[in-house]
Picture (cartoon, protein in one colour):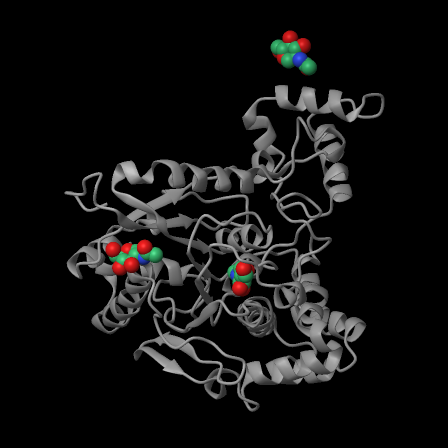
Length: 437
Ligand SMILES: *[C@@H]1O[C@H](CO)[C@@H](O)[C@H](O)[C@H]1NC(C)=O
Ligand SMILES: *[C@@H]1O[C@H](CO)[C@@H](O)[C@H](O)[C@H]1NC(C)=O
Ligand SMILES: *[C@@H]1O[C@H](CO)[C@@H](O)[C@H](O)[C@H]1NC(C)=O
């Protein structure tokens, strides 16, 4: 918060939920440092209070036994987030914040969390939301039965007797185990469906689209994806010696699931026996389009009368890594660029574009005004951010009939109509990604 803020300032509040697939990360990681963001806001006379939230992750946040739910309730990690928002609602005024002027911003699993809270139908405690590369379908959710199975499996790993004890007794013993040992079970932490937080059997884009708007506090939202969100999978899989023959594995799955597999392969140029690095790059582009871009669009389609502003982040990640620098707008780089942790290392073209992009977000957070033209089915207006700076485009530019995304959406429609994007994402892409597990 700006240094001189007193308790009567009544500043807008920006609350940040970090990403990390529900099993890692923290609001205080250096790459989420918001100093640059906050300084730019102050300079533009748009002061606000930035709040970062941590929540329980992995086993601590998501172990659940439906048979012992007093001791092992569902979705602790998500409930922690709710508690944080309740705390802000109750106490932020004392820090000079306005509890009725709150924007919730999430990235990846943090953005998925916002979608879940939004869908839970419980009273939202924020007026605006910004979702970077995360939606209801970013990570899989698991049924209560699945959680119970996992609970027993993990108990066995911890050396707890599960055959002759009731769930209650097992849970009591588990709670007694040291936190370090529980962490060592390595459970990734997946939200539980059919729960208070997520009262649906499954999570899908079709559900997002069908969403009947309620009278919640939410007034408008920015929904963002990065052109190469799939870079996260590329980086994990390219070094995994246990996974080979990416093209052939992918082609087999496409043939098993789709009526028109060759059309999918043609859109991405994936060919039999293709070399692994090239094939994986293409498959992860498909992942980006099907799992992130299409999901953003589904959110926009489901938004009813609430204004949605679509953002397509297309600025190549400038840092060295498994992917060549500046060519891929990767997962997490968008939020890092926005918050500005490494701004001083970037060249001027990048800095200028990012500052202009940041200005738009700051203005939205502090005024609630439309940051650019709202999305409609007919026009599909979106903001693209790349080396040329942010600019508003119509849907022909990013999903016209002759574009890669346009062709993918047409194929989705042909495969399964309203459910087509879910088939491509869950049944084809995610199955490929999970194959090795
Ligand atoms: C919990 O741990 C304590 C100390 O190690 C032990 O005395 C107690 O019996 C344990 N309780 C259960 C339910 O396992
Ligand atoms: C949140 O719910 C509102 C309806 O209340 C809907 O317009 C919007 O699309 C939803 N947003 C997300 C991110 O799920
Ligand atoms: C939020 O704060 C800004 C800046 O003080 C103000 O312009 C805006 O009207 C406020 N919005 C609401 C809903 O109070």
